[in-house]
Picture 1 (spheres, one colour):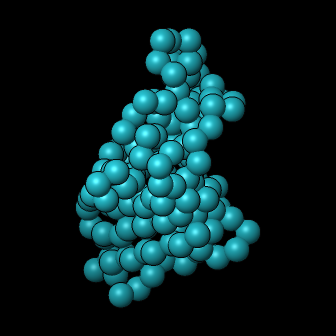
Picture 2 (cartoon, rainbow, N blue to C red):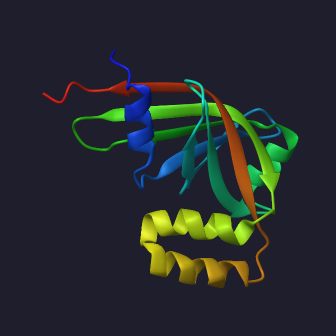
Length: 146
């Protein structure tokens, strides 16, 4: 089972993929939700930071406040298949939330629309927070492309 190299992981996670974010419910069951994200590679292999924006009262946010252990899965849905699974500890912050929203939304929607949506979302009634995951394990796999 061939793994992606650290550079391939960085290149893959730089794309605007939808990730699946797993946190742990109070009863121990997993909670999974699709998310947009921002990836920042760490200085050591198998490390980095993932930032996700969420509502302050969202299930994943509440779960993280109880138990910071999370996993994030990013996978292709067409050949050649590949995936990256990121595991780590998450923290919740409301610092610089507008910048986090703008940065993430611009990755997926382009700079102009990302800026517009960031302005709209951060001026609304919903309290947003950034979930920052300190990644301490990366698992990956890639198909051979043939």
